Image (cartoon, rainbow, N blue to C red):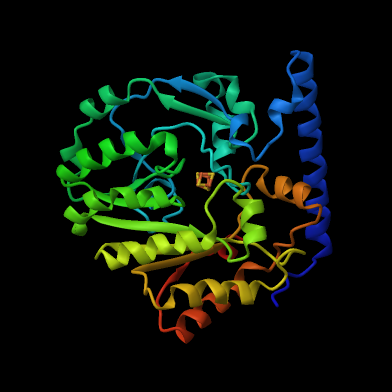
Length: 335
Ligand code: SF4
C-alpha cells in the first residue's frame, strides 16, 4: 500500500486552503441567494437533467495553440499534440470532479459566455451556434502534418457533440491534419470507420484513473466504467489503429480504495495483452478548487505530499514487469 507523508507544515497550509475555499463557497452561496436563485442549481447532481444548455459564438480558426502541450509558450509539455488543440464547447457533461477546466471557465469565461459557468462543473454546457461557419472558415491545410489534440477542454465524444466531432475530424483528416483523440467515451468507436482510412494521422488516447468502480463512479460520475474504456483501446488496436492510455489521475489512498499499488497493477494487467502504443500516467494535481471539492464530497483529506514520487516508481516497475513502455508526467519536480 502506498502512503503519502503527513507533513505538519503542509497540513497547516492545507487547512488554511480549506478554510479559504469554504469562505469562497459561502460567499458564492450568499451571492446566489441575494440574486433570488435556487442554490440547488449550483450543487452538483449526477442526474443529466440538471445540465443547463446554452449557445455561444466561436471564432475561427477552430485550431488554437494549446498550453497543455506547448512548452515553448510556457505550457506543461505533455506529449499529446504539437502544441495545438480543437475545442468547441464550454463545459463537459462528464463532470469529472478532479477536472481543472472548470476553474478556467469560471475565471475567464463568465463575461464571454454568461453566468451559467458559475454553476457546478458538469452542469453547464454551451455549444457554438456558428460551428458550420467556423469549420468552413478554418484553413485546415495550414496544419497539415501537425498533430492537434481533440479536445483539451471537453470530451469530443459527448453525445451532444458527436455529429459536430464527426464533421470536424473528417475535414481535418482529409486536409492532412494529424489528430490525438482524447476521450473517455465509447462513442469514439462509431468514428473508427473514418479513422481507419487515415491510420497514419490518428491516435486514440483513453483515460482511466482506477479499476475500482466505486471510486470511478465517484470521481467520474457520468463516465462509462473503466473496463468499457479499456475495451475502446482493445477495439482500436484490433482495427489497426494507434491507441494509448492515460492512467490518470491516480488518487492517494482513500477509504473506498486504500491500496494504490494494487489498483495500478489491475489497470496495467488489464492492458498488458493489448500493448497500447502510448502509456502515460500522473497523480491527481491540485488545480482550482478540485482537491477541496473531492475532499468535501469524500469527507476525508487527500494526502498528496510525497505521493507522486513513489507512485512514479511503482508505475515504472509495473511497466517493466508486464513488458510495456510508458512515460510518467511528474508533479514532484515542481514540489
Ligand atoms: S472528460 Fe475531461 S474535460 Fe470532461 S470533465 Fe472529465 S477530465 Fe474534464
